[in-house]
Amino acid sequence: MKYIIYARKSTEEDDRQVLSIEAQQVELKEFAAKEKLEIVASLCEAKTAKEPGRMKFAEMLSLIERGKADGIISWHPDRLARNSVDGGKIIHFVDRGLIKSLKFPTFWFEPTPQGLFMLSIAFGQSKYFVDNLRENVKRGLRQKIRNGVWPGWAPVGYLNNSKTRMIDIDKSKAPKVKKLFELYATGEYTLKSLANWCKENGLRGNLGKEIALSNVQSILQNIFYIGLMKYRVEIFEGQHEPLISKKLFDKCQEVMNKRGKVQEVRKHNFAFLGLLKCASCGASITAEIQKGHNYYRCTKKKGVCQEKHYLREEVLSEQIKSFLQKVSLSSQDTEKVLAALDSEQEQAEQQAHSKVESLKEQLKQVEIKLAKLLDVYLADALSTEEYAAKKQELLSQKVSLQEKISDFEQKGLSWLEPACEFVLSLNQAAKLVETENKKEITTFLKNIGSNHILQNRQLIFSPKIPYNLVAEQSEASQRNLTFPYWCPRQDSNLQPSA
Image (tube, rainbow, N blue to C red; front, top):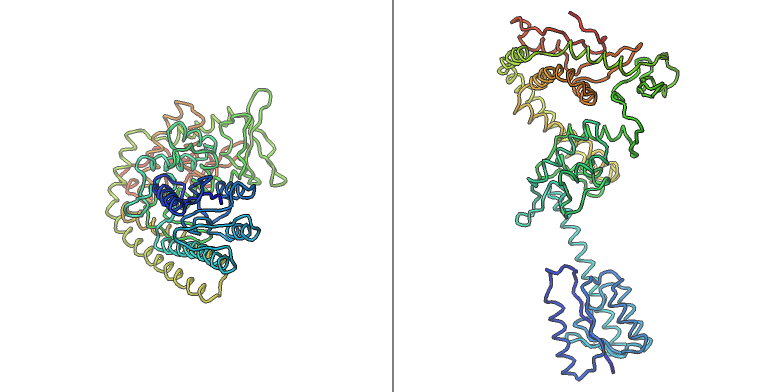
């Protein structure tokens, strides 16, 4: 009778169970020599047996079916099969008489009804072991995620800590990932351009692979970076440190939703495209080339529009530059205004303390709602989908409140820092007029204002933080440190008042 030695280990990784196959082969050859069995082939593979599809196992059955061998030597039945398909094949081969003998150093088998029954039990136990192990692993993963620890591979920008079993920030990649979000939030970069940016700046995945366009989109949509984790359909709070703020993350989602899934390919590079809206119908302002000049007009995608005039890019550019010249601050004026704002710091801190207490109370209410939501879900009053959606909404509110509390505690009243940033940005306006870099000017206008309107071929600018607000909040006006030019309030005409 001719036998085939079959040895298997459960993993393909070289650094795990390295000696398993070698040890099996030594033991099986000694067993064959002791029993005086003829060996015609020795097959081994590093493949799990919980699923069918092993190549060496199929090769062994093929040799037996062709009459090259009629017996198998293996360490234990679980080396042959841990699934019902492969186990059934072995038993079927025995029933057909193709396998006349099965030899195991640790298990008795004879091709009799009793022997087949015991073999079936052995295969059943092997499958039970795999199924039970799978359930135990799943239960462990669920508990780990409940504890706020991500159970899988960390996304790019983070690392798996093998000692603590926690997720740590990757200090070399994290700044680049954060920059990725910041660039996309400006609205000036496509997913493709960011994929090229990753390549140019050496940002790769944790396995060393290049970050493709689809990977960039996955990164930008991953709530892991704001301290939350999505496991299947449910959202959980994570113990890992957030890489970006929720405000920045929401801005990226807003940009992505506006663009849609398909990135638009532009044939022409119009400097102010995407900046303006029509005052009459609210549709976007598009651009086209006529007689060698760039013209801006309403897309009229929202129905009938009263705006019928075209505006040449040169005229629009002059309006914008005129505006920038009128609202720009000199370095000397900038220093005076910043000094006046700085004097408000103590009052701002007092107001911030009151605001923090209010936010903490709101946070407490959200946590109470989360606890009640779980009780309702456990009482079968909500479906899994309804529970997951409501939980995601509440956790999003919780993260936002936690960020606001942190900002108030660290920076004081919320208007103070944005006001300073706004003043500093206006100090740069004069430099932008000198450079005449239209792309930078467009980015600047988006940063300091919103809802830019085109009405009767005139730009109407709406600042996010008007000068008036800064003057009202500070003592600048009382100290004759008024701005040389006043920025218009929301929805007012481009021309500033004296």
